Amino acid sequence: MAVHRQHMRRRRRQMLDEVRISRRVIRDRLNPLEEYSDDEIFDRYRFRPATIQYILDSIAPSIVHNTAKNCALPPTLQLLTCLRFLATGAYHRLVGDSIGVSETTTGRCCRSVTDSIITNLLKNSITFPTGNCAREIKQQFLAVAGFPNVLGCVDGTFIRIIAPSENEPDYVNRKGFHSLNVQAVCDAKYKITSICAKWPGSVHDSRIWRESAMCQQFENGVHSGFLLGDSGYPCKRYLMTPFLNQSTAHQQRFNTSLCKTRVMVEQTFGILKRRFSCLQGVLRTDPNQATKYGIACAILHNIGIDRGDVVDSTQDLDKVQLRGGNGNIIVAGDGVNIRNHIVDTYFT
Image (cartoon, rainbow, N blue to C red; front, side, top):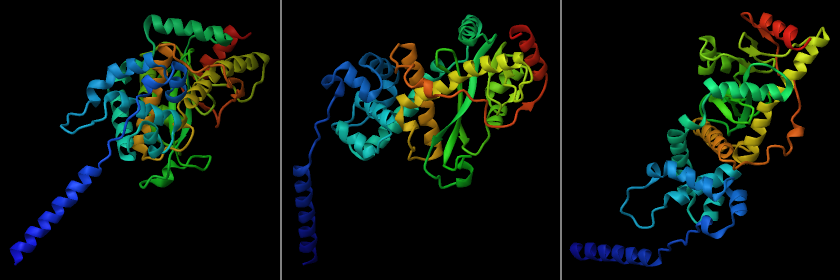
């Protein structure tokens, strides 16, 4: 009798499995590259097909799934899923519905593609200028507002995140919301040449700079030239900041030139966040993954500029105000003497 009941249970389970298999639905996944025009693809994914193919060629080997299962998501759709999320910042379920994949699959795509972008493209996409490239950038910055010997502009920006489960107070910034404080250096073409995205929102810009690899390089004399920063940064021999109390017309001209040049980093952040709306809203993930999203967006931003696949860089940039900074000036080293020398030499 017991054997009969066991047999019947196995038979019922088998029948249920057969019903589930017969009801299985395979979604018809849309390939947007075949359905939309170039402009429509750009509106949805922030890149045109040629650039998407360039990115795909660089990362495809690392996101191919070695599986015997049917209907594995191809690298093209994995990349488009991630780009759609970065472009909109929408919930994974909504992003997945637009392509025909599940919410869970969308999350996995975003994480794996982001990791692949950082692994395969970071080294060649975000590089600080040296040699002839540095000389060209100095000439480009000089043409902006007459400030000499500039290699880049440095500043920080907040990227909102949800409250993390660990060290939650550290991520509350001076504006009262949870965020990362992302520091970046840009060149005269709005390209990001250095980025540090790991710090909590409560950490001050000057500390992020002091502990960054870029600061150590300048301290050790690796680079010859200036960075321009606001008054939240220390005035160093390689880092020029504005005068807080302008006592002469020469100092005023110095400040005007510095601010007109330095505002390019704020404009860079504006272009970056306008292109990747996930950085404007709230990243609903942990700080580690939010850091990866920020770096991946910076890499893709530079790729777009290199390939001429850009958002209009002049749109709304007049809304970015020239400002002196967010803290008291910190005088160190011989930065003040060098700043005075620049005033006497170039702005008298």
